[in-house]
Amino acid sequence: MTLRSLLPSRGGPPHVREATTEDAPALAAIHAGAFHRGWDAAEFERLLADRCAHAHVLQLGTRGAPQGFVLSHLVVPEAEILSIALAVPVRGKGYARILLDYHLGRLAFAGGRCSHLEVAADNEPALRLYRRAGYVEVGRRKGYYAGVQGAADALVMRRDF
Image (cartoon, rainbow, N blue to C red; front, side, top):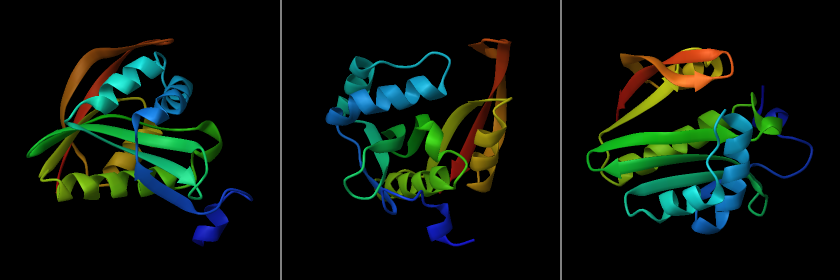
């Protein structure tokens, strides 16, 4: 499999850049398509304006619309991934790994030494992504996520840089 085979017919190669508050509406739309309870644009503006926020956007090509994002809160030396999501058309193509790897590298460059996150125990695609990126389970929160099909446990995961 080549990188070219992962790309849609238009848009160009994956490009990751720092997110800005101007991205808030697009990030809110992506988030709403990925989670039971999405965050609105105002919430993203607030989160992105926080001095401890580190966020990156995935685009296809340097001028493409955001297709995914990852948002973390970094208080050196610990980072917490608050959210990561991709637009439906680009899921399952390896873009989440590109985005996550870039983001973790930037967190390490900024002084981060470890990263924590919470993920629904039944979210198999996310669990595969995190495990392949070196995260290990360090805890469980029973019934943490309310969902359409009832409550799901949250797995607490950690990765050292």
